[in-house]
Image 1 (cartoon, rainbow, N blue to C red):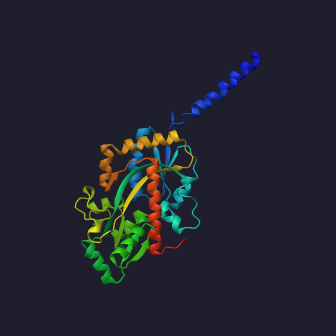
Image 2: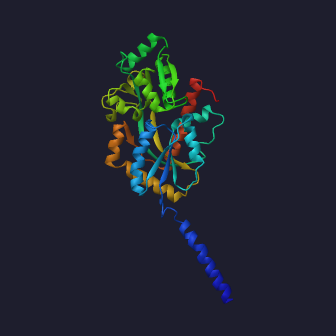
Image 3: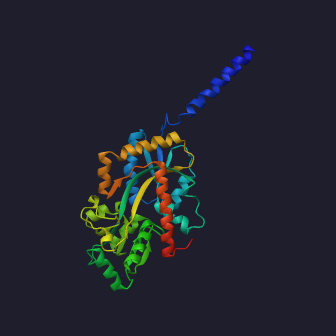
Length: 325
């Protein structure tokens, strides 16, 4: 009897150790670098904003966050890679709104479910899209772009980061709302699309502010307006497009996802540190340079925002006439 009691005590200790450790998986997290899968090309708005937060978050967690750019298929490639990663907290994914909210409507073979295959960790920023033109064009405001495009009878190029991207859908929505035609020219990412407008290969684009603010400040692109509902101190005296095209507005948001199944204590630790990081003056100032503001929300709020955007993008995809491939 004594031997049996000793055996049971030993078994309890052996099993109790891992169980106790498992009860707090965030205790020693992180103890190695974290990979941040970036479904966008270097130089894009998502890449710029994600890197700003990654540096601060890495410092807060005490581990380096290594950015892994996996652009392709409008962000689908990066999200697929992130979805299939080990759900241990050592892989995060930046949002690609087009891959989360547009691709489900235009791809039959989408390798993930945006609402079921990811943990929504933390939102970190909001920003508007900015309408820009090549500086060599005789266009100084939104009305002049509309008139110029109408005069060209559609023979004017609109650059985008790819079919189904924010820049594609927002640009097309603008042509519909303002009543002018333009040829859509998709590029492989936000960076290449902005370079095309700078070079004059395409004449205009509307894309997340972060992708072009440095180009605007450097005089390489001319900004005509932004997609926020009204003027914003973040964008100086730049007018809202809605002042010329009533009702036209769009606000983009960014955040971190994780493969489904990451222990909740780890998710909470990441979320709490993201909130702390984006509340600092340093990050706010860096965001402002990109025409963005911090966004702090719980996982539920983040998920609901993506769900609503998924619904709205479905309506836009249908109105534009994009077909599932």
